[in-house]
Amino acid sequence: MKYLPRVLIVEDEPAIAELIAVNLKHGGFNPVVAYESVAAQRELDAALPDVILLDWMLPGQSGVMLARHWRKQERTKAIPIIMLTARGDETDKVAGLDAGADDYITKPFSTPELLARIRAVLRRRTPESTSDSVVSVGALVLDAATHRTTHQGLELKLGPTEFKLLHYLMTHAERVHSRASLLDKVWGDHVFIEERTVDVHVKRLREALGAASVMVETVRGAGYRLTKAAVAPAAAASSPSQ
Ligand code: CA
Image 1 (spheres, helix red, strand yellow):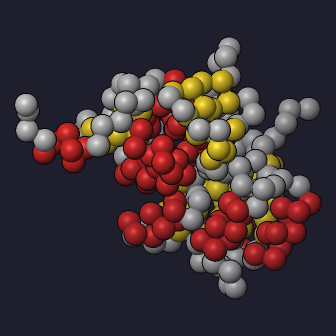
Image 2: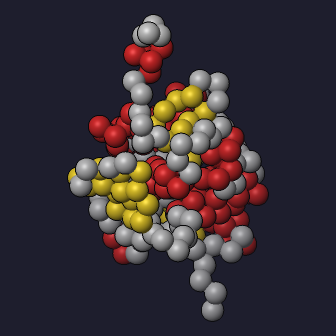
């Protein structure tokens, strides 16, 4: 029998939860519904889903708090999370992504849009397979097989999207990538994702990189570049030529 990806739907409005579940079942997924955070945790403890659809507004713990919590747990940190929000506010979207969500979708949404986004996060979760799984740029080393990233021998903690983004930048280092091209190459299906999403994940990647964050350069008006020879931008711009 074909494996059906398991989708945990955390949504307190039964009508919406049931509608999503029915549509996911028809779309070739195995949906599981939890109406609040305790039930959601119980489902996670019982079996790990492939994707979590997480409502923003829940009684008790909010969706954002849950996303943050699950991202911190070793067992659940790599599960893609799509936030469901009734609000289209930009600050809400960014807060959701900052809490560790991989994507967000604003209610009301269409079933094809929801299915496309679920498929996109599932594709994104699997990094590009290369014959050589270990790549290094300067003191930065990434192993796609073990999902480990180190800088000067110290392990870095990266979320699943940041890992995929860094993997792409490292395998295509010293080149400038536009936001649109990164969406295409890293996210795979960028039909419903805004270019702002790239900036949010680059910001998170830089935070995770710590001292190595200078290697991720913003190229004004063009995009981003990973470089071994990082030049401090202020010094480069202000120092007069000798
Ligand atoms: Ca709700």
